[in-house]
Length: 366
Image 1 (tube, rainbow, N blue to C red):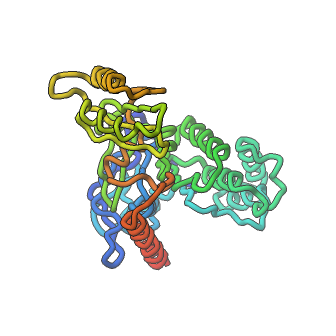
Image 2: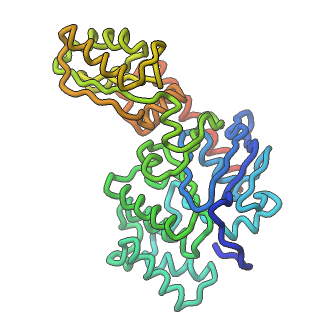
């Protein structure tokens, strides 16, 4: 998108986004329920949550596509309701699905959008060529987009979003469904965009994506921000360390679980791997021992009881463990493994909420 008037480049202490008590309802569904955000300019800010958490609805309000029902939101100081045009002149949005025309070639798509956003014909072709080469799509420039792979479609969609370099780029689950190689390519593009001064608000269900890209992360569940901070702060909030144990014999796991529970005085999580266990340990125990000392004593207790350990490690909790601790359920993209009837019902309920929300959002934007 282009802005008709020049604006000051955001400085290092500026906020790109600031929201207070942001609310959006669809009928009886409170999709966004009092969200507070403070997104520093020039960073990647991650919004992490499962399907139906309210991530996309929040983005649509910030991008002026939906009107909030309560609270306030500002983008570079501009109110998203009263100063919507000013906001639109500084932002760009890449949604969950490619918005380019699949019947046009890569070059035709970018030239068309460049002309619509104010480029002259020669400048439009030059900018299209520049972006196609930068995103590794030069060899596919003359091919119809419908013949692109999923990763290529996401790359050209992001390229279309930065034809005119925005101050703020919304990336709404940009790598959903991509293979690992394509995801890494998109991550490299995100880093390059931020390196040129653009702020990125990234919504994602992928824990490793937030871990790789975001300097700060807000965890959203059921329309509320339930935690916010740097990766280190979020990980520290659920324990100073994570103990991982891998046994030699699977038949000893039940005994090892009980030994570790008594030694560490914390719940022990059984991993999908039949010989693996994990426990979170805090800053210190009631007797003043730190995480490393607790872990060492636990390992000694396993050896004393005749349980053979093949691998043992102590590190920070993963974002996966943080998400599970905060929300009570794993993130959606992870393999859920064996599920109880309640697990399946909870999953279906979340999907039903998302389907209703999608329909209501579509009606609200007509």
